[in-house]
Image (cartoon, rainbow, N blue to C red; front, side):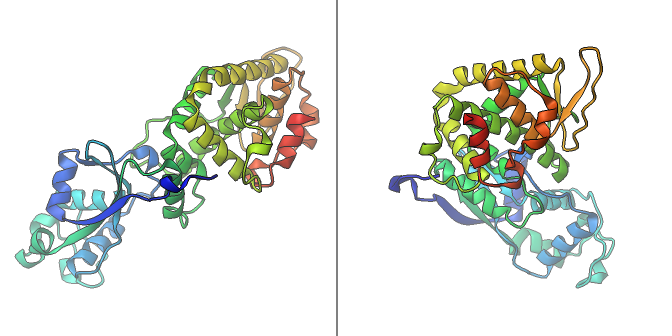
Length: 342
């Protein structure tokens, strides 16, 4: 991954907003969030109450991180649960509970707060906002999003790629729709995200997206559109996938031929196996003497089958046991290239 000097400026500004101003922005949709990229755990009422209590006693809060589009609308990247908490509290949707610093307000809703405490929300509290400009380089957005979530449990890097490199995301989702008769997740996922979507679901969806990114990487390398010699930092598999996402984001002219290559290879795989391939973390292969039997494969096996499909070869499922690509363990991509070019 690399970028030129003129791309290196991370464009952002810092500001503050009163709580009524933030809530007004939410009501008017000038501030909103995309649940697809909201990798956060829903707060319990106790967690919400703790945040409200922190505001009431004047504790500083971490900045809310947003990206501004070219229309001036703000999309929240980090801080969704805080904003939801404020919105719900002002709507009297929950009572304060588990308070440690001001237990006298235990069980109160917003409308029941004494004047002194209510005025804190209206007149005396402002929350910091860090606003990223829409024209910040996509590579910088990618690195920033990863670092924001660096402490999040099992954060999927593919989610950061999806956020920063949108053209690659749209292409991958189009590929998934077009190839569902050849390759599909065993557990079907809805792409209708909400703020209640669990982190586990985000990880599952990102994992399937990343699998398709590996298939694109194999196709581009095999057809010399993205040869290994052109990859600057091939030390880990994630670096190769980053390069592939950037390539797709910047080279949309390759979308149509690349789509044909991927679909043709997946079609060969499903025809050779006589079945749609179902992707799962827990592979279990079922063999029957009649066509159409169910085939469940893990990520390494799917990629190995796909490489055979790229080469126009028949697939031997038993042979897959000894062939480990290892991209899920973020190893060096050398075994991947060896499979591809041998």
